[in-house]
Image (cartoon, rainbow, N blue to C red):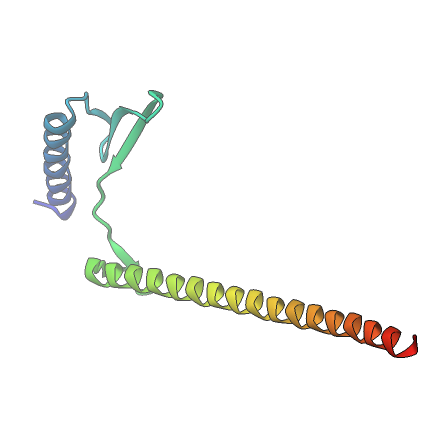
Length: 132
């Protein structure tokens, strides 16, 4: 068998398993929309009809510059995705900490201004008392 035929058999087997699983779990018609995609008619929380599209693909990998491909590594792709999520979470956390620090700094400045204004007000009152 050729590589393409092996991949087609594998993809079709996976799609059949998904069809059977979704049909058994949700009792809905599983619609074949292409050689590598199935659609599931579902309803959202408000009862509106929506479709979930499931695509099964067997990636070739990345071009290697020599007319071929470097094999796809799902483990590396999963690790890269996890690293990206962690980096985004770190940036979000740092941004939130910076925002909270700015809020605290602004609050301190406002408190200082209020204290100075109160002191000036009290000083005016004291001056009025001394002059009268």
